[in-house]
Length: 253
Image 1 (cartoon, rainbow, N blue to C red):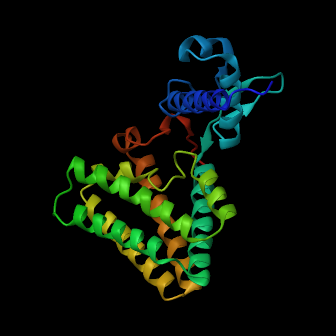
Image 2: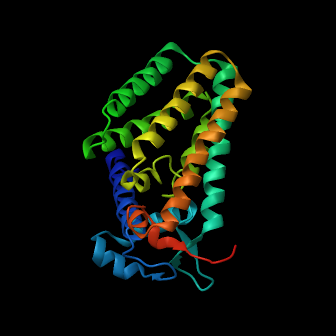
């Protein structure tokens, strides 16, 4: 007898919840790099059964937050500065490809309207001379929305899926380092530059200028490199970075 459809949905939902909670423990520093993940401990800590925990562990390994141990089980990974640099480069390359495909293939009116609405909302948030906590939070939300819309504009489920995978690491997401700059005196100026790049990318897509759209999006990712350098130089900024405890600091590359 086949299982009730809701049973499969409930099982998937429990796995997703377990995965999200386990990711929070890792990114939040409660599970330290190199520490072995014990299934039984997680059963007690998360209040979930072993099956969704095993599935969540496998998915987090696929995301790159965990590594499989030779004798079985998983351990929390750490990341060098060059790892993070490469992750940002990968995201920038894929977003550049998405922008080029969007320009070459064309984008529907609804998606373009959504993108312009997103830009307009960011303009409103950045209009005051001083950023507030609410306006900064609003920027983070709309920035994530813009990058999701860009992936959709590519018209390729494959590219969209690979971009989602590339953004799963906290430092590689479009908002990964945005919080770092919130403490600086030039926070608003940096966001205005990023917003102009957003606008230029949309303009290039509308004008069907594929090479320009790609180059602009690759350049846009370089803001994250700047924010990475700033985070590594400031203890206060580093505390605002999700997953900071996973970064392995080295004096030489």
